[in-house]
Amino acid sequence: MAIRPFVMWPDKRLRTPAQTVDEITDEIHAIWADMVDSMDAMPGSGVGLAAPQIGVMLRLAVVDVTPDRSRRILLANPEVLAAGSEIEKGTEASPCLPGVDAEIARPATVSVRFLNPQGMIDRRDFAGLEARSVQHQIDHLAGRMYFDNLGRVKRDMLLRKAKKAR
Image (cartoon, rainbow, N blue to C red):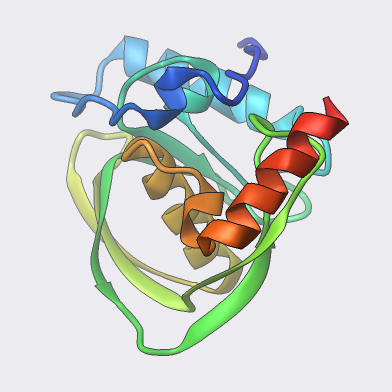
């Protein structure tokens, strides 16, 4: 389909909760296709993308953590139903704030409910990098950035470093 430009921080859309998707239409499928193309074009091989990152204010996300891009997961209205008690730290970044990343602690496993590409309510358990990416995308859909999970001092340092990098 098409690679869309990324919305750059501090654009207010990145702080705005996305709207619920009422039904899966051809338009939604086209947006997902653009999101997959945009994710695949990310520097550093991105493993997920939320629609607000490309300026589409709908609760849509795509995730694929495989090196060969063989396991596309398309989600509408994803929400975490349950999170495991084990917490893992991992490096996270965003094409919306290039040049910086941070170690973020998140649950290692999550159960998520979402509308799948057929328009059916689905429930799926995610672990490891998939769980991290799904949670990262759900944060975006709520108007949150990964660095919101940092303490104030670390967050301010990261934002100053990003500003310098620009």
